Amino acid sequence: MAQQITQRKQQELQMQYTNYKNGLQQIAQKIGDVESEAEEHKLVLETLEPLPADRKCFRMINGVLVERTVKDVVPALQINADGLRKVLEGLVKQYNATQQEMENWKKKNNIQVVQQ
Image (cartoon, rainbow, N blue to C red):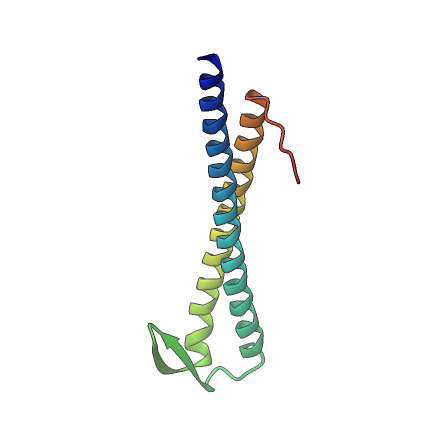
């Protein structure tokens, strides 16, 4: 009977560990996606910076290509880039908090990870 309890406890601990690892992996994936998008915004802003403000450019908005001028597009791109930076900071904080929570959980339950 005691062996069943320990086996059940071991399965629960394994499931919790797997949930933590999956959660961290999902957050890391989101961080990668946001970093990629932020890098795209940075590249476009750097490309548009030396151009005259009245030069025509095109921007994709909800799948529709619209004609604008550089002076119209740059502020919107800057706002988006700033928003992405804030989202990225939040995701990194969330990742670190989840990782710390997992470490505390491992200490509390005396969990040692065996790599094969």
